[in-house]
Every structure is written in structure tokens, then in C-alpha cells.
Image (cartoon, rainbow, N blue to C red; front, side, top):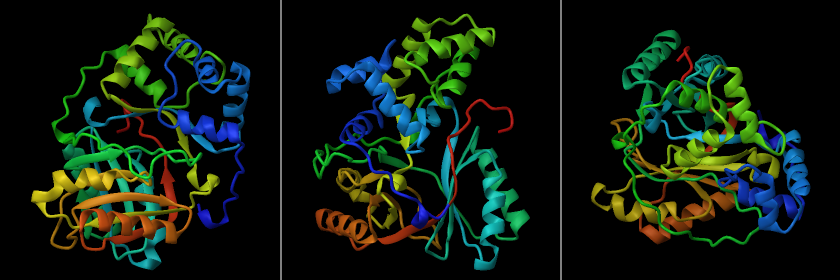
Length: 343
């Protein structure tokens, strides 16, 4: 997909308000649209119709759960491969064919194909990377698992009401996260929540019905309680709407790659993450061929906006200027399918 040719959807004020809420906070309740309606002073049907229009129009890519890979017993990593220009399409298509690959982008750098990889174990990640190296005859591959997580919150400011800087979040170390011991019915619920929530005013009731049809004795109350527990315990990182942000005017994103002294990471990482235009902020390992160790995903409506944010981060931290890697093509963007046999 070339975002330069994607039509921008003009959002109504109500849609902007709803998107600002449901990106990261879709209600877990018997009548979630009623709860949204009460918050915004509209009717339940108005809330539902507006969100349904955004789903059908493709502004909302998916309405569902984003899980913490580590808390489900999986491992994840960011990878990059240095592909000769004439092989980019072929190599990218091969990488995207793996169900373990959720995101795959072309970026402006010698390391030009960047992808996220999630698997049941680190061994499986290493196997997949070895397979990619063998099948493409390219062994210049970066494997960059997160060491510290400063922020992961894809939450675009559609109303202009949010502060330029946000509260600092606790620093997490993903590899130290304890995995839950999911029962078979819980695994079945994960498989449903990681897809699109059912249409209709009572989506959690519909999920319970689907579980019943699969042979599990799970009612709506169980679905609500389990989902709410996972949200509270951060097993579900985000329950909400994944936005096709280029359709709403956020047509540019830059992965800022920074070199931060190890002794300053716990101080400067949260500062970098506090900017509202930053959706992801991680520490990742450096390598002999790639010296950056900290990443900020910056979103804007132009390169100028992204560069202005990077400049403000630089001023706030005193760091040297980052290398900004712009996404120029999207090869794949999907959600992970946890507890799927083919992984």
C-alpha cells in the first residue's frame, strides 16, 4: 500500500470524540456503546452507528484486543534486513508469508525492510531468521528484541485537546514478564478477542455464544470478568480500535533511532516517551553494524511535523540528533494470531 495515494476521510466532530476514546478504551460491559453514549451525551444508537460507519469505511482497521506477547508466553522482536533494491518486493513478500510476521515496512536506509516477528519461543524466532537468511541469501539481518519498554500506546490526538507532553509511564522490562497459564477456554477467548469484536450492541454476549458453539461452558458474565481482569493486569495491552491512521491525515511516520548512554536510559527514556506524537518507545540492543539502542515511533501529518517532534525530543533530552527512518511502503500490517497451530 502506498499511503501517498490513500484518500483522507473527513471525520465529524462526534467521530473525532469517539475515536479519541475507543482507541485505547473500548468499554468492557454488557452495553459498551451505551457506556460510550453516556460519556459523550448521545444515544446508544448514535454511538453504535458512528463507530459502525468508521469500521465499514475502513478508518477502523480492527476493533479488538492487543495482547502482551510475553504475558501469553510468546516472544517478540523487531528485525531489519539489508535487501538490494531489485530484490525488495520478492524478499518482503517472502517475509510477509510467515504468520509470525505482523508488520512489515519499507524504510529509507541500507537496512530497508523492517518487520516485527512473534513466536512461541526465542528458538523459533532464531529458526525463522535463519530460514529467511537461507532462502534469500541475505544474512545481514538485525534481531532487536525489546530490553526496556517506555511506551506503547497508539493513540492519535484527533480533537487537539491532549497535552503536548503526557505523564511519564513506568519503565518495563518485557522479558521479565510472567506468563499466565491459560486454560483451553481462555485460549479460545484470546483467539476471539484478537480478531474483530462482533457487530451489534452486545459484542461480549456474541463472544460468549461463539464459545458455547465451540463447546465451552462460558456465559457473558465470564467473558466480561475474564476480559476485564486481563485489561487490569495488562495481559491485554489495549482493548480498542486500531486506526488506519493514514486515512485520517496522519500520513507520515518516522522511526527515530537514537543512541542513549546506558546510564541515562531510565531517566531519558520516559522523557522521550512523554511526547504525544510518540506511540512506541523502546530500548533495543545495539550491534556492530547498527549502533542505535533506543527507538521512538513518531507520527505526524508531514515529514516537517515528524522532524519538529524529533527536534523537541532532542532539546528535552540533550541527545544527539537521531536517524529518522521513514516508512515508504507497507507490505503487511495485521494482528498476531496467538494459540494458532501454524506458529
